[in-house]
Image (cartoon, rainbow, N blue to C red; front, side, top):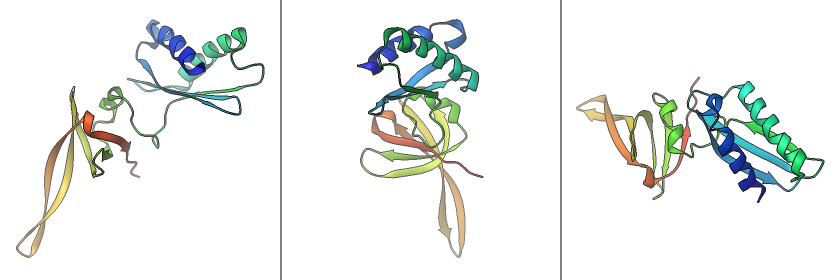
Amino acid sequence: MIESKIESLLEAKFQEEEFTDCFLIEVKSHANNKLDVFIDSDTGVTFEKCQQISRYLEQYLDEEGWMGDDYVLEVSSPGVSRPLRLRRQYPRNIGRGVEVLLKGGDTKEGTLVAVGEEDITLEEKIRIKEGKRKKVQLLQTRILFEDIKKTVVKISF
């Protein structure tokens, strides 16, 4: 119930010129009166944007008393360890390594090289044996969004 109210408030907030590149990833309420709000942006989420959205939501939470007087609200970007949930998150990760878990159970790893309306393209390095030598070949694979269970950006140092 509180989740849908927060979603509606953010839908209105994201119509403002300063926030049109923002979008909601997830709202999670916890039993201990804690509310996590994960947002993302086409240009990247700044601390200032999180702070502005947090203050905006706190205003309604306090006025309406939806969570009582004692609650914790955390507004943040999903972070690199959380899977990509929306198609809109993919373009910002072009050029990065990803691991894609398919609904059938298979896993694909590679570099995200393209994002289409209905699919993504991964570039995988495949080692093939040519005589006594091993050769690296690049293979591009298209994966439909409807076949993706989960995509995680791989961090390399």
